[in-house]
Length: 315
Image (cartoon, rainbow, N blue to C red; front, top):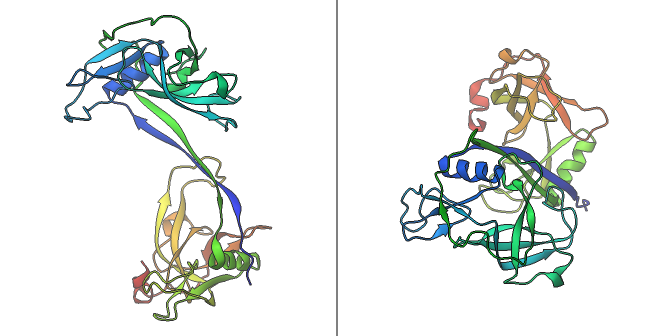
């Protein structure tokens, strides 16, 4: 029986977006130690602000300044902070309704322990020493025993010098991936520089990488079939933007490759040929990474191009 594999996996990428006038004013305000909300058609003040009324869907532009003090409405203790979280020591995630606001803002509360946190407690913003126009300009919240700095929201024109017009937010997902029986067998075969798929007992199609079930017939697959190693480029793209931490010069070609004997094309990088000479039908073979469990790239075999009719169903 094939050993079932598992391994930690991290998916991480920067997400870049532009800002409209409301979000721009909100984040620029944080840089200037000013918290802005927006007033809705029914008079409520939303913090953080949104650009459209959640009830009427009307565009919102009536910005107001609220206090940096507020009241905890709900909380949860975080005993083990993770990388990139606001504080490196245990803290509480809290929903805090800032004075003058009608909705709650989520942020971290610096407290010595869960016994020091309660719903209804008063807190205030602790500003970061260096601020750039991001939610992290609020370093955290801290307990506060004084009076509200602003009892009522104050109208604000949202105008600041050098406004923030865009942000880049890192997205990260950490989890343990278990590929299951079929993909574990596929990964084990790669250690021996073999590519293995599974054949559907009904339609007889061979799927690579195997999924454990036929996506067409919906029945389990178990018969293993070795495919390749050579294959045919069915379609491709030219990559012109260099990815972070990827030691490959651009431009390069990434392609769908139908390995001989497979009924599903897999992904692979094409090298050993100028990028502008890669074409549909190009016959390729794998080049294995030294000491690795995977194919580094595919290179031309020198064979004549495959006829389109032999791979048109796999494009």
